[in-house]
Length: 356
Image 1 (tube, rainbow, N blue to C red):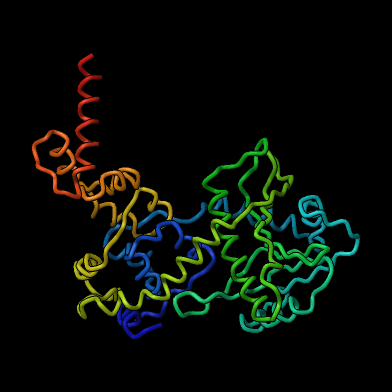
Image 2 (image 1 turned 90 degrees about the vertical axis):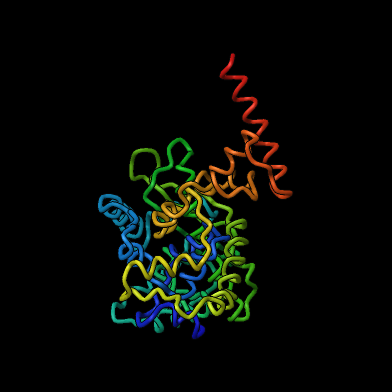
């Protein structure tokens, strides 16, 4: 953490990342505002609330209770039910599978549990299930502790991250947005586990890029497991973490007056936000706590219409400008020429359709 990033946060402690917040970094990797705020450890939910644009995030209590109940059922009796599901998914054909619950000691510090995880992974052999492991990942110079649902060893010594989710897989299909979110979160754990193995002197590729997703089947709580390839998510995540590591240069270039200290008046915080470029898209509403403010800020711009529109109309920043170019009422600049031709062609087609 650099002094410039600490200054942006003011006197507040840095917001601790977890797997969900790290996974959310991949949702809009081109957004400088998101990168600066996350690298500085700004509490974005509190910031959004303070400036009058609170977001609506988090699971309902019903969904949380269903998820906790489903996980408890799977892990009862030393993961007996979960083990039977993993045998099918991973091909575990050995009758002897060890089980270690690293979360049994409630008095364990995070450092102590991480040490036990390292020791167990360094010595483990054969088929095994490791419950409540604790991994770490460096995010913008800060160590983040991560807790996967489970790590499973195959007979050949291959490691798989296991993610337990309460959304259903019906007739072999699940909600694509939920599967995508679970895949990114699993990729965070895979990356952390690979880096730990490298520290221990082992081959990182021993951690499979196929994460195991365990969900209820159809409309019951009967579990089923599928393998999810997270290579694409790993690539995006690695790039974004590297970008966060270099975001201190952006922070240092900001005026000294820019601060996100939550003790400041809302008008000052909004003024500070204007100094850090945002890359708003409608998808941000499901991934970033500041999205409601950024949507308000982007009103009237082509970005507010979605990434495909913004990308197709490169160089045309506002809806008013796009309409003027489409009507031929504005002379396009050199960089707007291609977009202007597309807009005018679309306007002609629309006129023909309405005329017919």
